[in-house]
Image (cartoon, rainbow, N blue to C red):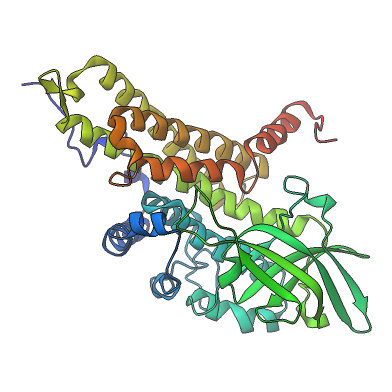
Length: 392
């Protein structure tokens, strides 16, 4: 009889997860079980309805997943690979769930943890780690996405206070956030501000009619003469270094996360190929189908190895932004290609929410764009290679 892989092991032919520590495997198993029990029975309905229950946040907090790679203030203090594995297992369920975790931990909590005052840390981080307070990250603007240095949102001094005006676009968690980390231009350069929900002149409006990341809240933020106390400013950073360092943290999570989406698509395609019959035989027995599956698996394993290698570099404290750009650019493209190939194996069934493939494929189109488009990461690598900036 011809030998076949155990279906449960076929997504890790190279036994990459054997390189995880016992604690990292425990995180993997815990998050995978939570996703299977709490997310997967409902995610197709949430995606179709364009909603995500806010009550998931305290559940994620109770597992220690929010800001898990930060130390102190109620955070779990786990390593980068544990965080990466969490992103992978969350995105295997849905990119919207991984976005909730990574925006909360890497884009909202991280700048407070790294650049905030002690008072800001004490006020917000314990509640955010517990999922009792939600955060969002306001950088992208309606007219300035890839070029944040040209932002129009500005904050002017008014006595001892600040007055904030402007708008932000495509903000995950925007309308449900209790606190927004907003980056604005000032006379002293770009600074970060903490804007409380309910602040006079601050409004958030959800973006509807999305065909991607539907199980995620995406909003516009508007600031109309929002008066902020001096204590609202993040005191320990100035310039684009602040928001870009946060994006680098979140992009690392994407490098891992998209391998989860790719894995889910591969598993769906492989399972379908084993059972679907055409021309009197299983379609998994046709050479064209086997060729697709073999290349999908090879690409998936390469992406997983890249994520693990970058995790080790981050663990050693030696990772660079260019390395993260390479990982984000390469792994997102790989995941999209795997999702598209999986769709062809499923045929017409591949475009229904009965299977996860079209949902992941649609989500990955957003992941390709946010937190640095493929083009921007390509140019970042081009500059690293040539020493010449192509931005301006």
